[in-house]
Image 1 (tube, rainbow, N blue to C red):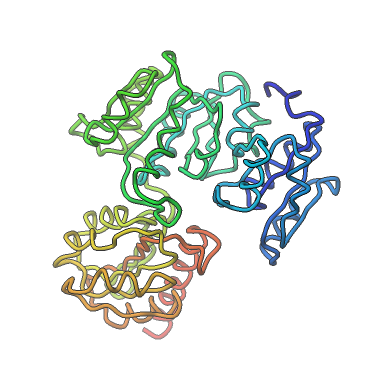
Image 2 (image 1 turned 120 degrees about the horizontal axis):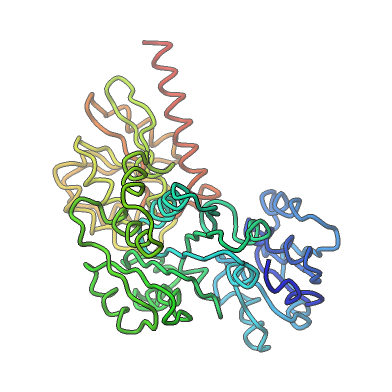
Length: 426
C-alpha cells in the first residue's frame, strides 16, 4: 500500500457500521489509527456487524452518537448510507473536521490503477464486464465499491500494475476530496434518490464529482446519447471518450469497449467476454419455469428506468411485482413500456400506495400484498402458461430487506419452493 503512515496515530471516527464501515475500521486500526465507530442503530444486524471488528481496541457506540467523539477526531469517515444532514456529519462540518468517505480512505492507500463507474443504471453490469475484459487480458483485477468487497477490504492485497474497478454511487461521491480515478465512467443520469436530493440537478452534481480531480492524464468515458453527459464533457479537464456509436454492441458493452480501448485491450478478447457473459445475479435473472410460467428476478432494478429496461427485454406478457422504499421517483414513466405487456401488478412495501396511484389507468389491475411471498403467490394464481412473473421493484429494499441481494435471494427461494411444491403435487 501507499501512504501507510498517513493515518498512523490519527483519531478517526467512522459513522455507520455497515460492510464498508467495518472494513474501514479494521484497516485503519492495522495502520495504527485510534478508531471509534458509531451507529445510530442498535439492532441484531448492527451488533452482528460490530462482531466483525478485529480488535477490542476499536471503540463502538450503538444506538446514539457522542458529540465528544467528533470534537476529538482528526477526521470523520462517513458511510454512504448516512446522509450529509445527519447529526455526526453536521457536527463535523460545524467543527471544521475533515469529512471523507471509505472510498477516499482506500484511494489514498491504493497502488492500483483505479477505474470508477457511476450512473443511474447499468453500473453493476459495466463494472463486472470491465473487470472480466481486464482479467481476460491477463491483468490482476479487484472489483470493489458497491459490489464485491469494500475498497478498504481489498486495498491491502493490491500492488502496482493491478486494477481496482469500482462501482460508485452518488452517496459515496458526496464526501470525496482528492479521489482521482485514472478512468471515470458515467453511464447515464436519470431521476433517482430524490428522497435524498431535492431535485435531479442536486443528484447530478453529486455524480459529476467523480471527475472533479482528474487532469489531462486521465480519462472520462461518457455516453454520446445523453445531453447532460455531453455538457459534462465541457467541464472536464481529462480526456473525454464517448461511447454509443457501435451498432453491434449494447450500451453497456459499448462503455466497456471504450474503457478497454483506453488500455489497448484486444477487441477479439473483449468480444469473447461479451459473448460468454451470462449476466449478473438479481438483474433479469431467470429463476425457474413452473407449468409454463417464467419467474425472473430483477431485484437490482431500484429505479423506474431499470424496470423499463426489463420490460423492453421481455417478449411475453408480464405480471409485475414492485415496491419497497420510495426514492422520490415518478413511476408513471414505465407506463409506455408496460402498455399491452403488463397484465397485473402486485405491490409491496412502503411505496405501494404511491406506485398504485402513479400506475392507475395503465390498463392493468393493481393489487397490494403484505409480503413478497404473498405477492408471488397472488401473481402465480392469476398467471397463465407463457406469462412472466417479474420482480422489478423500482425501489430500494431497506423497508423489508437488508439489501437488494437479500430481496432477490428471498424471491428465488420462494419461487424454488413453489416449483418444488408443484413438482410434488403435480
